[in-house]
Picture 1 (tube, rainbow, N blue to C red):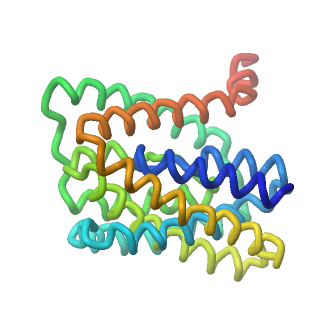
Picture 2 (picture 1 turned 90 degrees about the vertical axis):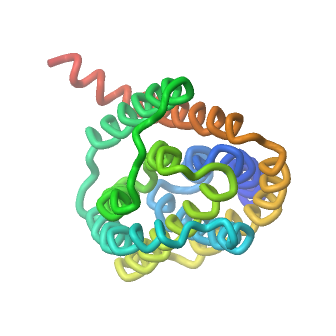
Length: 249
């Protein structure tokens, strides 16, 4: 039953993320937390995300923006290793809150961006952004589609955004996986459950690609914006106890 539920939730998550430029961890992580133990989340989700994004890289290979990828890689590799190491040392509740606020505010700016020209993001911006994104991903397990507003403002839509982002995320998960393994965070059962999540992504990515081809750039933009909003609100809702503690002061 555990394997079945992981496969179903993973399939649904990958289809949705194909249409919204990411966000699959927001479905997969709660299910892993419910079915397994909390320490299983980073290694299991990282394994599943690695396999799912690897397949996406092959599917969208021709759409990957390699110039942007070379800007992203140096910061992402070092950030992922440092973040995964920091995960074993500390956990910052207030950082999750800041991420939630950032995603909600970014979604608001993207809604406005539909009516007027957004600020163009240069390629070099993804060098420091890649480091921060990968570091927080390793530290917090998952940070949602935090770079999606920048991908959109850089000029990537639909297949180009999915392919380029998948290549970027794949590097982050490879670095995280090696770091978690070196720190003893992996077990055979964790690896198996991660493989289940990754295998369910294969038919889901295919289905998502078929639907994505029928979407316009405007529809994709709206879908991504809605996902960013939901992701931000979800993070803030999960941190409600943190807000309650602050309110007491």
